[in-house]
View (cartoon, rainbow, N blue to C red):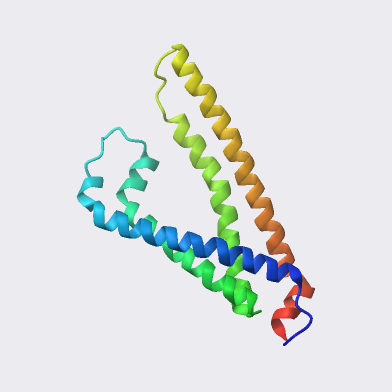
Length: 170
């Protein structure tokens, strides 16, 4: 056994093993529920005036949920490989974190587009409260998304460092 194993890789691997293991379990249950409870025809009966993004999500909902399960499984497998210091796992892990960064940033754009397509309902006080809540949600989501993008970027940079690479090449 190699004594030059960094604590960083071990901690990151265990955090992602636990997180992706839980996400895999939840996603598996979601997939079972979606495929058992919902018929694909139910999603085809959507209003014509639905925004394009929402329409796309509903049209391919089962496929999107399945893709998320596959990504969770891949993250779990690569996290275990990361713990075992397998170089293929380090590269896959970096790739998945890169997708996470892209997803975080794309979600900000999608959120802005989605909320901008919502019709102005009225100038009533209730609607103004809704708009204020919407604005708070958008700021909170932006902070979380940017925070995860920075965190994932930092982990990627550490995994690409020469000292960490050496652990995986021995």
